Image (cartoon, rainbow, N blue to C red; front, side, top):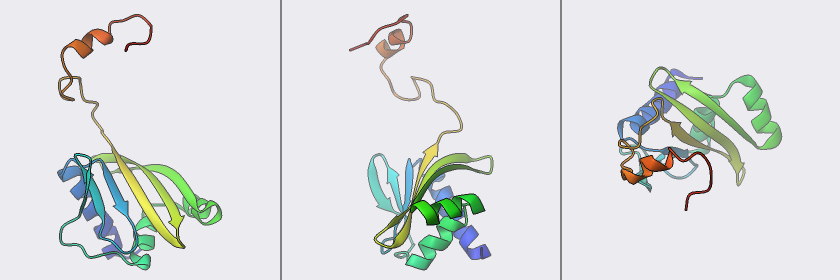
Length: 134
């Protein structure tokens, strides 16, 4: 893949990490979209992506086996690590004849209940030996 494609996907992944986004979506005809606090927002300064751009960006993170699965089954689920910064769960797919890509950030560090903003009472739930908590 061209170096510019590699740099582009890295720029988008770094934007996800920097903005504490949960998802990155690459779709033909719109700019790359990131999900921040539940809302989809375009990556600033990036134009709508062409079919070739989305395909090149997607294929730049797939290995040969994954590419074959995508071509054969029209979708592939996979995960990958971006350096020491992050891990992503991904789904590459065909939609209306074009390739698309959805990435979900998997936190490297597991947050505790306080970091998640959970009320103190929720901590008590972890002490229950069994049962369904309603």
